[in-house]
Length: 403
Image (cartoon, rainbow, N blue to C red; front, side, top):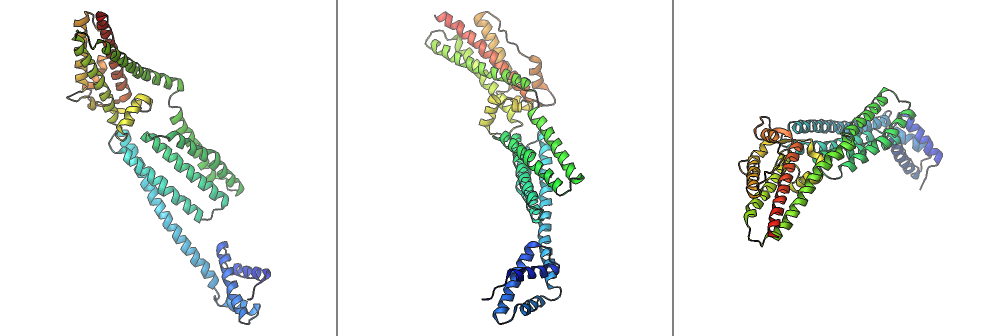
């Protein structure tokens, strides 16, 4: 079997490039194909020069050049199709995210679902298509690496923001990971690539400025929404209310076990009212929180109210959820008044409950029903704590009588 020398292959490569072929991958493919054709002719008895001439002539005067043009056309057609799809998915994702934001601001139902669709279109369709188009454009190995890192970082951060909006776990980890990839890997590679290609001009500088400014603003909104001292103070106040309420309820149950065998039964009615006040208070807290957070499962939302109160305290709630005919806020107010009267009749001492009647009146009669749910939850929780403490003193009063 005849084999071509390295010099022969180099000569063939030069001839192909002289015909106008510029794409390196196409040059390699044509060299391999032409070498096979020449070796086949040489096996039939022709010398190298004759086999080379006949093989090159078999393509015609512009045959090799036409091959490149057809290849370019097919590649360009493919890229154009991908770009069109990329543009459609990008516009769709942007519209969905914009609609999700409007629905979220207006507190309309379906905001979470629209957000998920928009984020999925952006992260799972638009960004991968963008990366594929960039790679097909043969932008160089360094640019390919920077684009891969940038795309992964952007997808990670986008999902982190979605998780933050939907109150899903690992939101902070995703956002921080995406930020690190974009700021400390993608951005330096992007700047270095600009310097290396001597294209560090407006087209390169402007995205850098926008990226750094955007990250700074987002960091300020997410991380510096309030100073840490203020945040901790707000959290401690509400968590203290919940902890004190739980502790008081446990104490009351312990005293009731002591009193369960005594002959005095007057405390039974007061105990039933106190329990109803606790149950209705918790139900109303959940109802107003759920009014604008229907995307959060019930168990998770109740846990959020207790353990991650600050994450939803600035959100709006619908006061209409408190105005139920049964076990609503009015029933709660009536029960508290009833308990105060019962406490006075039993002990002869007036109950000293600090009730924010102005707020309660506003919750019941306010025309605009959207209101910061954190304030409502705080008022109802504090009111419930006062009642349970008052009930604890009443039970202690009966315990003293029994002993």
